[in-house]
Length: 121
Picture 1: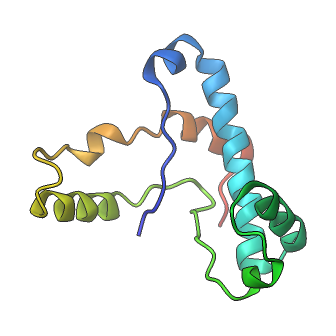
Picture 2: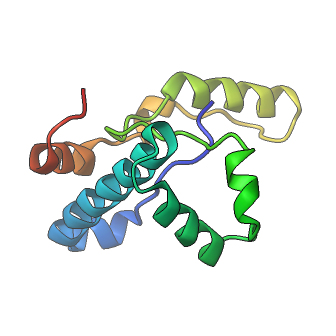
């Protein structure tokens, strides 16, 4: 299930394409750092320190008991998950109009980041 995505302000990104590309590269690097901690234990203690500092979960021992969310290390968005969630909200009457998910997911900046960092296999 896709639980988060990164949004860019379209006006800002179009006026600052280099900044948008570099931000995405830095974001992808951070995703990978977190992913390594979550899946392989690499730098896990440091990542836990960061999460303790910047989130509401302050008890170190709980990080060994909870399931960490996983973000694709190549930044791929689970579009089918977004569609499923949109369908659920639509059926609940919480949204009145559906959008074409493929029209709102833009990999332009991610492609740049992957060119800079390479893909994780």
